[in-house]
Image 1 (spheres, rainbow, N blue to C red):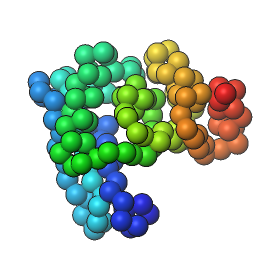
Image 2: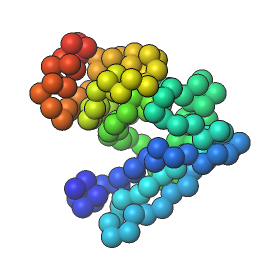
Image 3: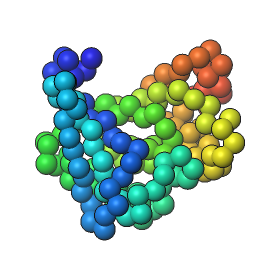
Image 4: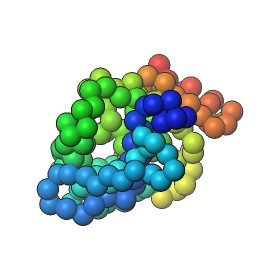
Length: 146
């Protein structure tokens, strides 16, 4: 809907480009104007599901995202976060309204690191808006929203 209303929308893929230098790959999603899929460069192409980014990975992700922002003239943004892995990167973004779209109880999966669980709880309290997909998640999130 945002793209349909003339906003540029960037969907950041959970798959990264394994590269030694910061950068990104971008492709327009067919059938939609102003809707793009972005793959950021990060050495080792880590999985987002088990551990948060290391400081080295985070610095490279940040440099890759900064390159995209500079190349495309992005000055402000709305960041819709759908997994705790992204929070350390998004919290470094200047001029960004941060929304956590809580679709799952990550702790319930059992194979998620404690670090990601802690990040999620921090994120609940720090973002500008939280949305949830169930009453149960609403009650869970409210424990951490300040």
